[in-house]
Image (tube, rainbow, N blue to C red; front, side):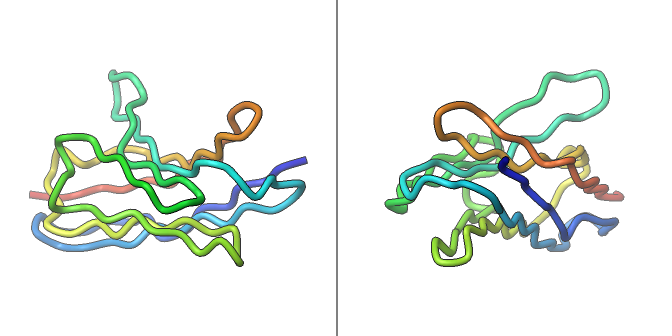
Length: 114
């Protein structure tokens, strides 16, 4: 069984930075895609950023230039460095592992105050 454990959320002022981490454990195929989604109150869950095991990345337009996704394949861990945070980035952030289906973390709250 795959487990995803997230950490790093919290409260930060606008313009600040946070770094999210997500460690995957269990039976994990070497080739996969890991990413971060977010869901704000009253809104649908949306993709923030994703990275393949080969290092290819994809970002939502709203975070390009501010967020950076990276991964450590040896540790099955994905990171999301979030800089220049805005109040509209406030949401619950979910880690995702896509391999023969989708696996999700429990979510971590990110709150950006103005």
